[in-house]
Length: 204
Length: 189
Image (spheres, each protein chain N blue to C red):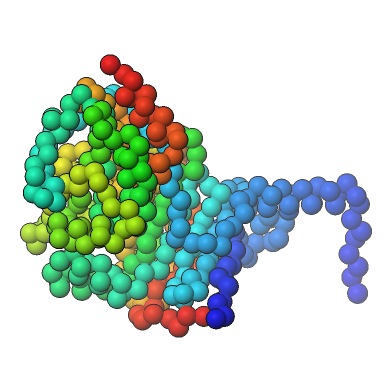
């Protein structure tokens, strides 16, 4: 049986406005960003879903499209009420994997991250605490599956969880994320991220 | 027509360095995705504290109290069946338990939110059936006491009942360095 090769596109993480600058200026301004990481889009040949993976920094960052149906299945099978299942699956959900690649601790805070819609507006990301607080008010003690609000990763530590973006299926946006190490905060921008479609794309 | 100025070798070299060095500094992009490998490092806690005590039931509703394990080295693993790295590390946890488990070393896998029927069905699907106790923390009260933010998270408790090491994220428990670390704890008086 023919099996499609994974499609991988590589893009350096440069701020969008640099596109308009002169090449020489852009090269110089881009040096720190280019030297510090590369992001690649990968299309899963089995599911047709995309993920974006940034490597080469102190923090590896992976952002994986999740179908609304999968989100429903995850929460339904935990026995959570329909209201919770419907609300979470109405968000654009990404599986997010973070890993400390260095020999020193680093930390992140989801409250510092932003998603940027095509109109240029920067939006905060709904945090795990906000979800857990809402569930707690409904008498539900469930507090797992979402990416923790903040964590300090020691050497070798990594973590994962869902990140929820308040956009419709298929919506495009840019993601700005950051981490702090040795009191220095690093920020990265992944352009042209897309929410998962409403239904499973046809496998390639 | 406007002609481009010739580039002298020195200028060309500088331009090449400017363009190429950052590219060389980047990490090669891997095509696989969503397949995070397990690590093996545990981080020593700066100030070891006595591990919060608990009593939780296992799959046969037999209670296990942490204080009954005093004098042993204990690996506590907070996990759930829906958590991919938890699933991935389970065979290595069993391998470690088979190797070191006994009078002086114990593994307690503390499940979050799920019930015994669900977990029993899950373990039945594994290639290697876990023989260490699987305990149930249905309201996540114990994981809260241990400050667990994400799953899986593991702790090593020394013979004195102190939390001495922590690992956030999945681990290859069968790695020689994990075994060595536990053997060092076992050698302590």
